[in-house]
Image (cartoon, rainbow, N blue to C red; front, side):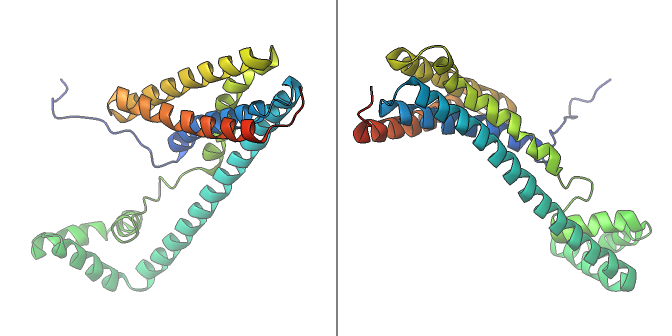
Length: 233
């Protein structure tokens, strides 16, 4: 029988969930802004399509590369700090034990209890490394994130970027602009709803926040494109 006090936590430490959500949102906002900004200048449907496709491809590669490199650098930094901690535990176990005991005592744990806890932890080298890394560095060795998982944002960015571009593959002009706006608005609301479900935040607030960001970005770029124009029909 399951205890009513048992509950499960989602694991966000790998970076994949953050990259996926950010990828869809960024792809949507970026490309609807680009597509409508170009469309506002009235250069012709083929130019808008070209800009949208270029934005989708370039943005997807840029985001994947950025996520991969940032996560790789973060992981390498963590691994370096873990190696420093591992050497310190090997060369000065008593000093490390005293440091950990002091941290626990500062948090209000009884010195005797803290001593017993640390003595137990120090019996297992891997547990000792994990505990010191978590308490001193805020690092969990088993959950440092995957660069390749983060780089999967390539696909989620492309998905978000395709939505406002889709109408321009079949039509052009005012109809395509209206369809891009409608699809982007609906997609923004959907992203906000999914994020709210994931974070257990108010659905309406999350959906309207995402919609507002998309509308402001698209409205500004469309206005700039309209003001500059190209003179090409």
